Length: 355
Image (tube, rainbow, N blue to C red; front, side):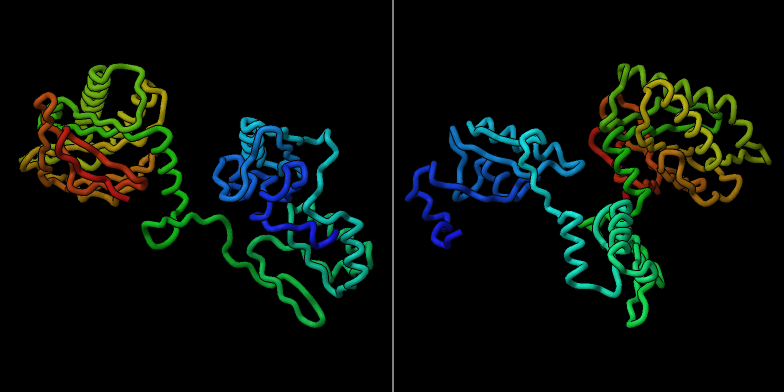
């Protein structure tokens, strides 16, 4: 092709539309490719006009259909005639064919062969082809991500393995986001947060109505019904378990940590049955003033939803006034969740449960 047939983009205005052929990136719907930007009318030098023809010379790669289809739809909306699909016979692969690979092996004649692109089935087929071309099987290595391959004059082999895989970097903090934190974040984004604050008296009964705050939770009932449901579940749990955690040895001693765990388990089971979803539940228990912890609080463990609560062994937990109904709620001094969450009590004052 003569060099004078290639022109800078700024010269295109000197030619008629039927004299112009543009070879561009974007057959896979890549966000920053030229064709995608043209379909979005954001390209600085090129635009798609009514009657233009756009030819996709490559089929979508597996898992990439949606971006390609969206690009095609946008181009059609601009008035372009878009030619695409397997039935058009215009697909051009971005990878060499088997015969081309054989030609490269015949030209280079390597001593060792290390296929390194594609799925395992593809790597094995490539290695099989190389062996058919005369490369000894002991000189062929198929490695996985993380394998350390040692190459010497006389041999090539896998000698070690290093940690590898997908890692999520949190831009606001140093280090990687661990899998359990990521799962909690996904759960919060999908199911929301259900924060419940309750106050239990030394008589083993609810001292005030439960305070409930929701974020991103869709309820199949009214808010007042949820409050009644939670109060009933707490009352039933206290009636069944108070005697297991409270004892009178001259003065009343209560295992508040154990009681909190029992209340949380019972309440979680009831809520999951009633609201038919699995939000992150932050359960806050207020202990009465001057109460005594009967035994040292064990190390806090995450519950089934990934929430860890640390009770304040017999400490008085400050109340937060609820501006909506005059009730009071309690927030313990330490609340830790493995997901990003905020537990609220009342309209104005909040306490944050942090990652």
